[in-house]
Length: 238
Image (cartoon, rainbow, N blue to C red; front, side, top):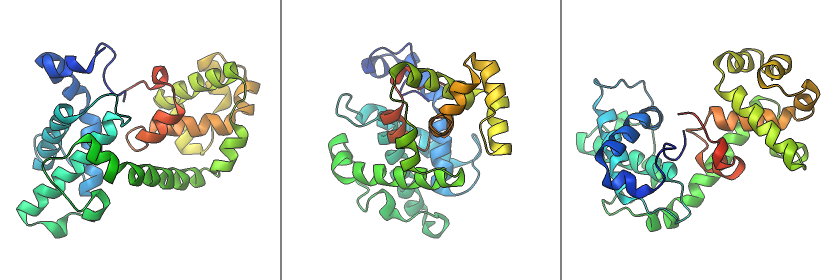
């Protein structure tokens, strides 16, 4: 999902306009649920599980505490705050054994005064390193590694832009992405027909194309890497 919906040109809109904020919260529910499910290690359903209410309140709190322009992606900050608040919740409920996540993963201090500066000091490097490790493991499932991506990265700006557009189509077209997951490879001909790009262009950039599409399709997991690799105008779809 994008850092915030396209109509929101300024972060202040989320702070000052209640309807804009409510719309953003509604659009962000897939991300909120994804983080909560990962943290709790089980299926969660809106309207049934209290953990989702805790996560939603934490996301709303993140909006209030976030400081734009400090170099921390909002979703990364919100993800950490959701994890911390859920750990707080389980501690209060004395269900520590039910939470399959070591509290050390999100910091030993679960203080209510969490700020962006504290986040940067305590968590940013750890979160980046964790994303890199997880993405490396994801790449191995597809027979790729980071060295492959460096070698396969397009040197020409136009080629890179074309492959980014193709990756966006691949990641967010359900029929195409289903083929990727079922067959374990990029459906070059089908993607060429859908995107309008020549099959040879897609085949030459296949490794880069697949890696970027994975970042887009798994966008809730790879927030930092997505920000680094994918230009803002390509970070589409909730």
